[in-house]
Image 1 (cartoon, rainbow, N blue to C red):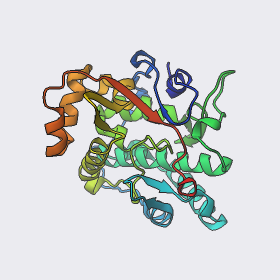
Image 2: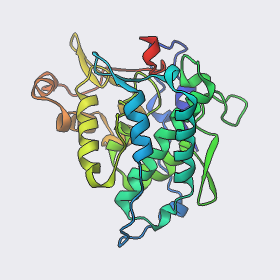
Image 3: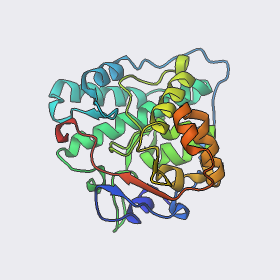
Image 4: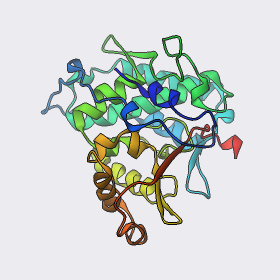
Length: 279
């Protein structure tokens, strides 16, 4: 199975706005049947309060509409809180939750694990520098098993490409999981919760689509985030599908700019760490 490492290994070496790997290097959504179990009648909810407090204290919205994290200001108390929250999620019987609760659970677990692994290795200039994935040419942390859920070790790649993408088939997932990079959709300053899941996903989609790192017109060219190229299959399968998606969440001004555009001309991604201390 191709992983996110296949994407970044195919990227240019620069950590500025990167020309990304070709679309065919993107990981496929391959379902892990073990995580398809759910209980449609379940009423249990997962408490994400500790995670919400952590995010409120350390996620800092910028004037450029990019959220950054104050990694350098996270003290030992909050480091312990984050690890305790992750341990609590790992100990949750996620197979006994309903689908909406599961979706919020996996998104929050992915984002908490990402922050935890960055904090463990901080200071770094990019998450790509955290080469803890298995394999001789490993790049980044995505392939390493970082937690055991219901006794099953899972990696970030597992959560994104074997659980979230194939089970829900919702392109908005790409606006929810955060890779601790400037080019990534914002890490929200609050958890995802089942009661307002769709509203949060829609808000995240609109925020990214209407930001220059999501889509912009450069001269006469349409330049988009490499997310829309790597994962084109999730956005309709071709440039026309991506354009329809952009129009769904785009502002009237962006829609006006996209009118008449039939293809993506270029794409890029900024892998620099979303560190408020690096602004």
